[in-house]
Image (cartoon, rainbow, N blue to C red; front, side, top):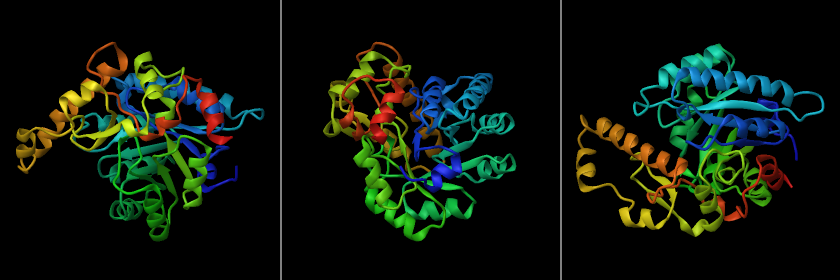
Length: 323
C-alpha cells in the first residue's frame, strides 16, 4: 500500500487510524494496532480519572517503543477529546494529554482552538472531526494538522454527506490532509476512499467484534448478526444524531427526542443544560448495554458491520482491511 501524507504524519505503515470508540477502545486494542503498522486512538472519556489516563499513556508509550523496533512496522497512538460543554472534564484531560505526551489528538463536537494551541506547544498533532466544508475551513484556519471527514456512513456521531461528496468537496477546498471516517469495512472500501482523495481512513465499527474489545459477547455478536440495513440514527444518546443497531429495544423506545426536549432545545438559555443531561443519560445507557447483560440494548455501530463475520483478534481485522 502506497505511502500517503497520513503515514508520513504518524510514522505508520498503513494509512489507517483505529477510530476512538466510547467504551470499546482500550490500550490492548491500540497496542495491537501499533504492532500491525497503523495508529490507534482512545476516547479520553473511556477513563474515569486523570490518573487512569496517565497510566494508559505510559503503557502505550512502552508499547510504541516495541512497535517501532526494526523488525516491526511502526505505530502511533492518540486520544479523542470531546471539546464542548457536554464534557466538563475536557480542560483537565487536555492538560494531561499535553503534559504526558501523545502523538495526536482527535477533537469532536466543539471548537478545537484551545486544543490546537496547547497541543502544538508540545508538538502534538491535532486532527478535527468535521461534517461539512464550513467547519473544515474553520478548523483549517485554526491550525489543525488534518481533517477527519465524518460522512453519512460513520458509526456513532455521523455526518450528512456521502463519503465521495464530502471527501472531494474538502480536498478541492482545503489545503490540509483529509482523513475519511465512515463506510470502511474491507480493502475495497479503503481503496475507494483513497481514490476520492483522502490520505487515509479512520475505522471503528469493524473493531467492536475484536477479541481485545472490553464489551459483552452480546454486543460483539450483534455486530455479526446485524447488517448495514439494521443501522438507524437516534437522537436519544447525546442529543446529536448517532447511529445504533436497530434492536427490538431501540424500536420500542424510538429514536426521536421527546416533545419536551424539543421544546427546551429551542430555549437558548436552557439548551446547553438539556444537552448535558441528555448526554449523561445516553452515555449511561450505552455503557450498561456495552458492559453487562441487559435487555436495554443500545449498541452504537455503523453500517460497516456488514463485513463483520466473526469475532477476531485486532491484527486479523487489520489484515482483512489491507489485503
